[in-house]
Length: 160
Image 1 (cartoon, rainbow, N blue to C red):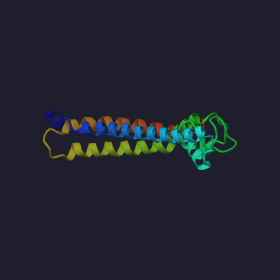
Image 2: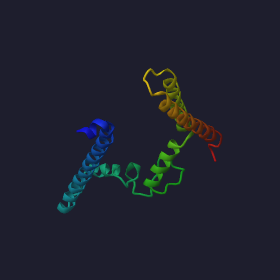
Image 3: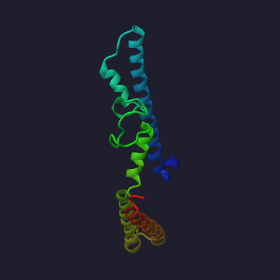
Image 4: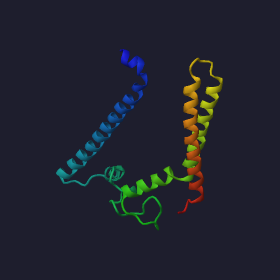
């Protein structure tokens, strides 16, 4: 019990891990049941309803709109080359993750956190907190300046 008294914050990553594993287990069961239902239609020699087959388009490995992997318009529009659903999702995610908006957002958030630690180091009434808050404030200021440089670079060289 003393372990969780001292390390109470470990409950959060452990809880996220447990709920993530539970979510993956439920997704696995859902896809397995869907495939079992399609298999039962195939064993009977019947054609499955179009809604059931269309529902497979939302499964991992399928392109948007029910196209087979490697075919179809893709998320960027009909004129953009489409090399498969996984590549397109990854490129789309990477564009927005590393775009200028996210860089500026990171710069502002880390700057605000650094400012909060600078304020806490100056005005905290708890004894012995000046040095730790000041150290974290210095580190966060360096991170904020780095994020600001990356945000300026992402905005200046966006198309390159």
